[in-house]
Length: 230
Image (cartoon, rainbow, N blue to C red; front, side):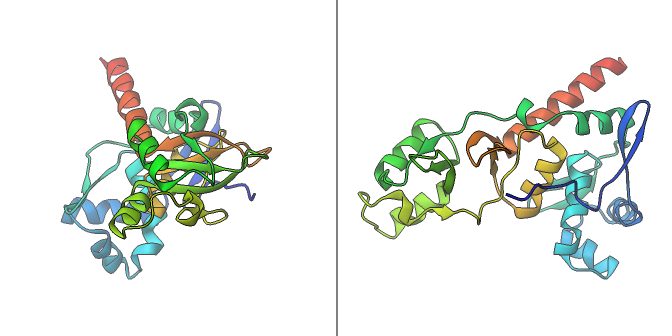
């Protein structure tokens, strides 16, 4: 599987203190547009720059994940008022997915839709990872929406989950050694709720990274930095 790299919209600078981010000119323009017009939608930002919204997804992901902008559903982007603290940048690139990820809920291709639905609610998770029984490699994913759709369509609940799952290689994944910023950018760019975490040596699932975990990480980091400043 191809190794994912830091998005091209992020420029890294290394010095004695660590690894930092330098915002691009386009990202700085986005900040100024939001400051002047907040709240403002992604479409409106793209319109002012003469670009399409998909072109700006990675830029907006960087600005929201670093706390400079705040994205509010059905409202738009607002300026948080927070400076881009180099200490925060360093934390972002030091913390890896393996430090934040949670345990995945695993099922098999022959698991029935009924049993999968039970597992989803029993473990209170948004997605189930389907693995091959022999190799243990990830072969698919079933989301809460997939199961809800099957129930609404009156599908036979005794059918195998393999019928409705999304199959590899159509899944967006992350790895234990990727940074939270990289993985968070993937979550934002693809508008998904979680990522399976795969071993780089195999295609086996070693964890799960959800939007909730990413948000909890930044809240914890923000509180720690605020406490240090007191």
